[in-house]
Length: 116
Image (cartoon, rainbow, N blue to C red; front, top):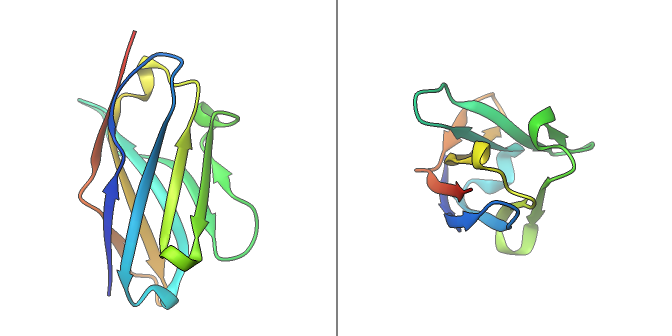
């Protein structure tokens, strides 16, 4: 299993930046993809970004050129750098990992609120 814990959420004005962190522990060597999702009030959870074990990162169109997903292997942590934030980015953000065999694991979520 893999355990995940997000941090870094908060309240920011439109145009500002935040960096979310997702600390992983457990069988981290089995991770084949690292993802960020978000869920806005009254909406379904949506995919935001993926960092695969190999290959380029993938982003939903709404965040391309504003958000960057990255990782620090030494810290077993991956990140979501969010720039030029908009009120529409307000949501609970979740990190997730997919491991060998196809199972997925989720963090508890962190609130991001962007004020206009």
